[in-house]
Image (tube, rainbow, N blue to C red; front, side, top):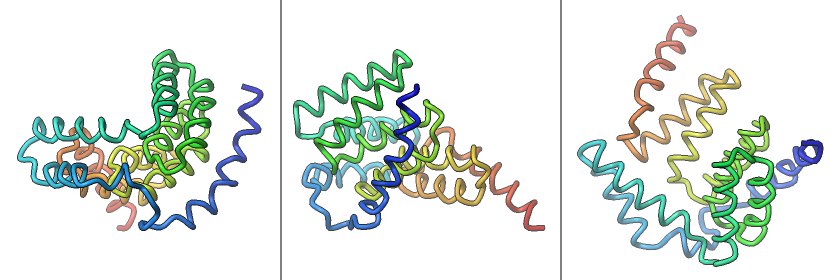
Length: 190
């Protein structure tokens, strides 16, 4: 964990790249017509079961970087997370984002590893990068909502959750969380 303390400065270094990224940044693997069609199907899903199926298809597409090396490192990082070795996952994902800096899912996964390590600032920076690269990443928006809610930012959390629900209206556990936050925020504004 000693090496982790030095890592906390890394997201600050990445911050200018977040601001410089534009929707027109080259992202061929992320802007394909099949993915766009899946998002249309997700928006039109009539129930939670259908939305879950489409979400899984979207997640499968997000998990492919186009690089066998990056995909292998991602698989190993996922295994490290399952084994509760978030520090190893961050190390592996550092390599992934170096190899594939436009792969939104790599940034999102590294954010989850940082969150598990107890580094919300690094996690938030990586989530911002992920949603800059893929603004429709409902999982990243949900993760950002959780981080902001944990930090006490109810307004930011609500905005993030609402963004996730605008993309995927059938997110199963988010509705009650949003309703609760709205009640809490309304109570504060009275």
